[in-house]
Amino acid sequence: MTNHFLGDTAVLTGRSLRHVTRSLDTILTTVVTPIAMMLLFVYVFGGAISTGTDSYVAYLLPGILLITIASGIAYTAYRLFLDLQGGIFERFHSMPIARSAVLWAHVLTSLVANLISLVVVVLVALLMGFRSGAGFLGWLAVTGILILFTVALTWLAVIAGLSAKTVDGASAFSYPLIFLPFISSAFVPTETMPGPVRWFAENQPVTSIVNTIRDLLAGRPVGADSWIALAWCVGILVVAYVLAIVTYRRKIS
Image (tube, rainbow, N blue to C red):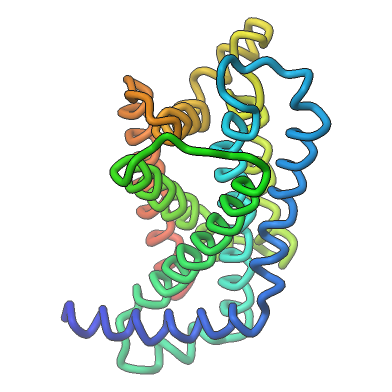
């Protein structure tokens, strides 16, 4: 059964990846907005923002990486919606394949596409002067957090793709996720925010994830934020996965 599921997932993932490679503008579109934000904030607003000893591009990069992921998962919901409306699911279900493999193929495709986008953003940040004090284990930890965050948000995208009534609705759910880093420590220290906004910023998931990635990239010891970040990522992943499977079963029943 396990080999059957893995084999089906691999085949369907290959199909989805071929669709992505045939429309590379998808990845390019995903990275254009985050890179434009990074250029704008570093070269226009960066001189007016005090973040301590870090260069502003180093301070900003973790938040930009999360925005890149939030932008990328919109395409997962979009592709899933098109497959659903095009009757692809019904065709697959008429074949002897594992039903959950269809969803996992979209999730893995999202992961690969988002990792490519993240690499592009980091390369641009390096050209802008970003330098990291992290060693191999630090970069490995950052990669692990970004993968976990991507998979968690992708399962949210699966719910949106299965539940949407229109193409626009399938991808529009990502807008609040893209906006969330703006009310966090991603762009400015939370200490500069007024009371209620500061409370929200310090207690939402993006701040703990951003702070953890920032410390890891700077080569600093990570504190309690790392455990909070992991708890948020795992919690979102578990809840989103369960809801996605329930929605999927209702949709195809």
